[in-house]
Length: 255
Image (cartoon, rainbow, N blue to C red; front, side, top):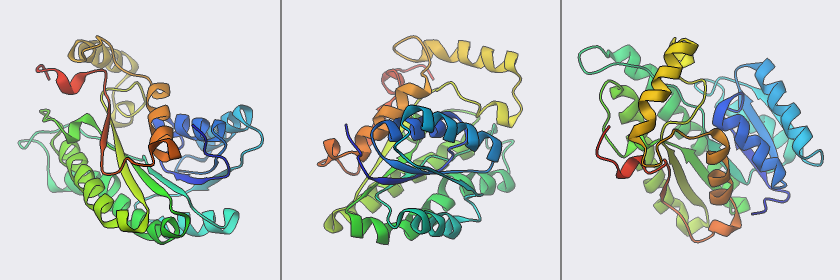
């Protein structure tokens, strides 16, 4: 799979799936605009990209996607002159059922997981029409299946999946593809961001493993290649799909 000379915006690039995706994109020959709030971590992403492929450029954009979408587009165009691929990866989660969750939590989750995706995609689409590019949204198996005590997160990902399919239909006549990847439990720092200690997170991963058909949770390096594939010409006849990278979790009855 080649992305030679393509320019990709990748949000949530300071850690986890986003950072790993930046590395896989430059290996495939793309230039990346790596977007994140943590500049120190973004610099680590840039170092990994430079090591993986010194010929590809990695532009660091320190930004809050809930506020700085126009800045992200402007700086990418100023540096590269075009946009071929948008990877909407940034996301947050929170615990809470209908008994505990409140509107503030719902608004916070939707601001990052959906509203910012809507706005950034809207700003980038005119550039993608010019380049006949594509969008890859990083959703979740939680957008397709129901899980207790993550109500705000689950419905934000369900909204993202519907957004993916609707925009895929709207953009197909313009030659622009829109897809999502839907991972299951992937080792990252997303739970630590909501307060889980190392010990608590280890227990979460241990409990989660049997709910995947493959008997284990996934790694970020197993998700990034799926994003590269969907963004590449190898997927030229794929649009509007939810591409599961879930170790068979969607097939399992236990939650």
